[in-house]
Image 1 (tube, helix red, strand yellow):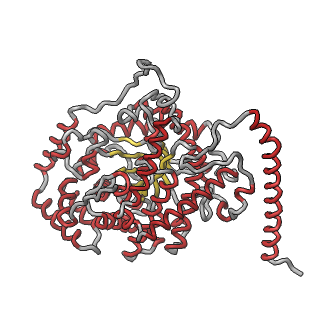
Image 2 (spheres, one colour):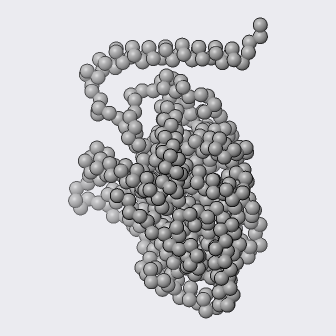
Image 3 (cartoon, one colour):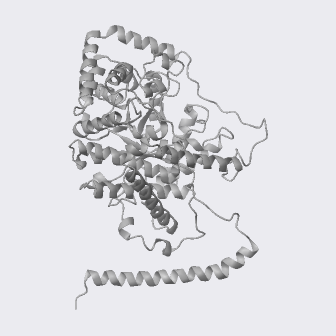
Length: 574
């Protein structure tokens, strides 16, 4: 009689059960003999060991801890559910993009920093914008005073964006822009620059962060009410899907959720809740999921718990693949393939003993690489003080290059795959993420959960507990609450300083641009923009591109749309 697939499956189950019982017996015998006698002579350092998410860690892991994980959930690189990596060859075919973030002063100042980083071997650009640009204010607005060019580059008008990319071929270099409430305007300026230079929009690569939902959850940079803001994200996704084939119109970000104080598990869960909401919104607009999902990208942090972070990235890929395929019916593998940028954790950087930050960043970058990141930013050792100096940026970039070129970790795809500990952690994180997502669904979805303050309370509770552990010394921070230097022993470091004349120069430039433009054409374009904003089914991108080409400023565009959408005020979360 021929052996059927069911027979083989039953035989495999019997073999697995037998092996599991044998392993369990071995572990029990080890605990009673070697372990028990050793603990009598040398007790363990603490009664309980925990991950960064405060999940208990066993002494040792064995096949019994992963026996219930089906092979299909681990699988092979480039194959659903992409646990081991989104691409079949990973770093053997192409290294991750080394994308050090930069931005300060005027567009010309930042352009000079871009050219410096490219000369040092950086392979992608990442842009920080100043607070007025992030919040949609022009540099001469009274709300901008003292902030112009301080924490990032100031961008008011299309001329600024032209200067920002002077001498840089946008068809050859991918560009990431860390911008949220005003992201669609920066995208419009980027498109206008490309069209002015005669580029093919379908050859441009990069992303705008554009993840507005996480602003209401964590970072608190917003302009418009939630549902209107979600419409703007929808419009950018639809526009890019149909006009910019290689561009990522949203970078769904767990990084800022983590930096606000969440646990690593909450970071993934809340990011997935946001991603679900974006996909649902675009699908409701009549766009097939396979038309846009391949260009959605993610942004995670790499925190201090080395193995939990690796498992977190692997679990995130698995969860996303299952959500997109089972909930939204995606058919293309590209739609289910989670690709992510990773930044080392700014929240772990310390002013005390700042050179320790190099070691922290190296370990965090290594966990990002072992977790399969497509793009990595390593923080500068001085970022607890200010935006990084050129020396700190170069050293941070060299950290990535040493990992890539000297360590050998890129020779094998997912070298930690099959680790009993890593696979068990991956499985546990996935299960916990789904538990959070179920809570969000029972509350009525992501927007309802934001409006009820659910995410904010969860993050605040975990952050408070972490702060207490740090204060008590239970959470060790080297140089801060253990191995502390005596007063006066601090080693000074060089810190980047922004030219105090930046604000004056930027304001003068903005006012000159206003004098030289066609004021009537600007007014016409802003009226058209308001008409488009009032039509919920219309796409804002074409009208915004026309407005920036006419010379309208960031603040003028934001205020014009605000007349239609209104402004968001957060309800306090207690």
